[in-house]
Length: 299
Image 1 (cartoon, rainbow, N blue to C red):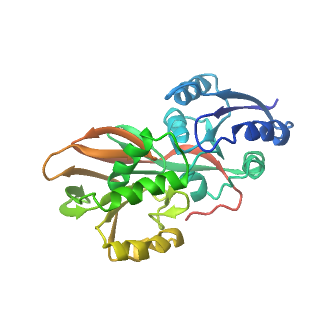
Image 2: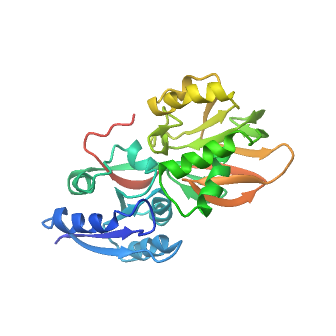
Image 3: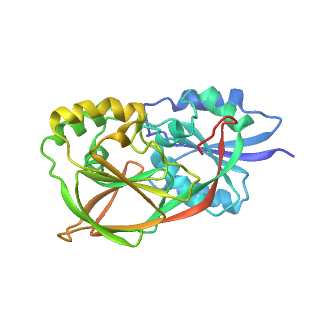
């Protein structure tokens, strides 16, 4: 008997290649292994609802066809279950897919579903909201809030927003409880990384692993304009961790708040979250099953 897959397509994510992905699924999925159903989301949170029902129905695999936001919704439903997460990246940044070396070419991504291997990876709870890849407070979260209001998607609209706000955004002072210590840092942003990328192949946490039982807390100090421009190539080359502007601390749990107790901008996988005075993070090891390329090694 064939195993059942549900493909969840978010037609609003990314740059509009979902019709091509649908055709690729129908053409290239291995019909000797799998029966499948394709469903489209109709509103925010719908992917999570579909995935929850699929878990109840004991579906073998749920495949996210969208961006990191769609992935995030689905992973919340699949954590601590036997249902496997698959990825056909069709969003803008596709941070987790890039980290896992899953191609943005639909046929190659489907080949991973047909022939990949199952891995158990860590997830992280931020104020009880789960994520797989990246979360943060500070400048990147501030940009995510503005990007959420934008009708345009893709790298250049995001970069334009980041560049525009870079010169006016002020660093904030944070109190961080981590590894039985309390430290204070003035930071431009703090990224909580379970995987290596924000998206668009920008490697903010090059050494982060999905299976090491650790969160990489990346504390970034404000650079000068000139230094910021020099850091961009390091970000794409996976060498930002060698910059004197970056401090990385590994932990399995931590708590962060502003020294002024003001509410912070927060993002999870690029999606804005309600502003809070405190963020508390806790890693849950090996809490999600995912299909990855046979040649993928992150450790």
